[in-house]
Length: 133
Image 1 (cartoon, one colour):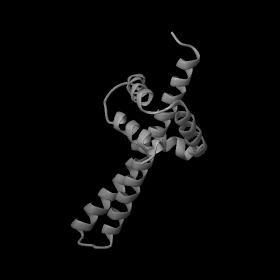
Image 2 (image 1 turned 180 degrees about the horizontal axis):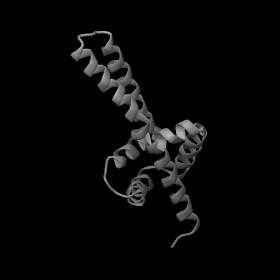
Image 3 (image 1 turned 180 degrees about the vertical axis):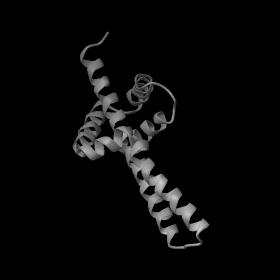
Image 4 (image 1 turned 30 degrees about the horizontal axis):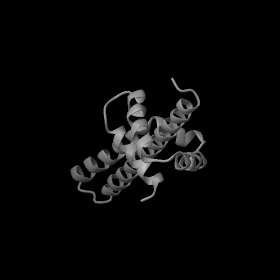
């Protein structure tokens, strides 16, 4: 596992904590500062900036992943309800499809949010190097 993957996993781990973005960045900054060289930090940041999507749909998924996935959870639940109550096996297709789309959107948003957190942390590290307190 390269530094890129390791930083993304560290950011996803920080996303699981209930705290402010500033606190997450602060904790992640310490971890990155101790384990990743400056050259690797720049390389990872360039790679992340190159692959971050700029279209409005992905930005919406990044910022509001739960809101975007909610209708698909509803479709999955409705398909399950109708499939059971009317004994229609075809309704379970809606359950599988809606659930799969909702899970995909949640995972995509989570990954984008973790990448954004790594970018913000690396930018803060660069800022502190330029202007020490």
